[in-house]
Length: 123
Image (cartoon, rainbow, N blue to C red):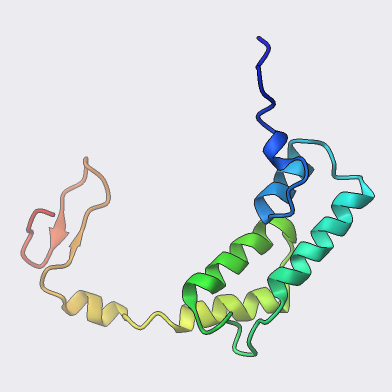
């Protein structure tokens, strides 16, 4: 079956993390000099402006966005990635004790399992 349009065309010159991933994995450009240069430029941009605490702009969403971009491009663990993950985890303010003290807590693991909670209420 021949397609009228090339579904990969959108990725062919993409400089985005998703586009670079597609070029490397789906378009067999992994050995090209151009892709290597584009990857390096993208990774440098993703790492730019990271705060010393690990975040980007003290913003969880921006930090997650950068980490996902790095996951698609760099793929290796670095100090910058670890401190960003630590910053995200440190920002989680709700503790297990707080969750357990919530009387409306319902944990439902699957439709085949019973519902557990302090009042056994339905979600």
